[in-house]
Length: 199
Image: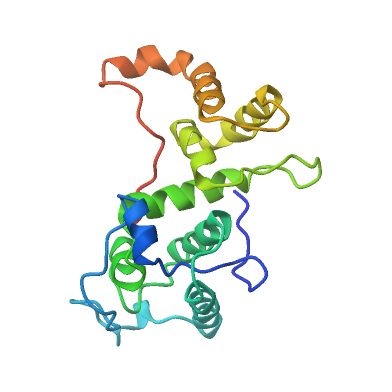
């Protein structure tokens, strides 16, 4: 998996306005002002301390995130870096609680942003493949394993009319990649999204 760096040129903000939160039912509104250390946190334990490099990365990411909601890819990559490196560990015991307390984002929406970033990061830079323009275009592909996204996305591009990718096209393409898993998943209650829950 290719992971982009948390820099000012590639990351954007994540502070959600009330209107944005209302638009996404999975995003949860703020319950209380952010106050630093989460309940039960232990700031003094050496295992939780960030190195100077990690602290600088976290400051850089959060400074950019505080400017406001940017592109879904930039936001997803920022959250991905914070989660994978556990840069939240000084103030919070889990990434999920960090998202809720710091950014008022629910677990499902955070996972969708990260899942979209992980998949788009697999698209090659060298062949000029157009990228999805919003998170909703990637969401149907979350049902597929990450490694299948580049092929499935290119299939969707070939079916679009003058480059227009409709929800119907996305559903059709995803369904083409699902049949060989449908029978094995039917007994378990149907196909589920390939999600990795934030920790």
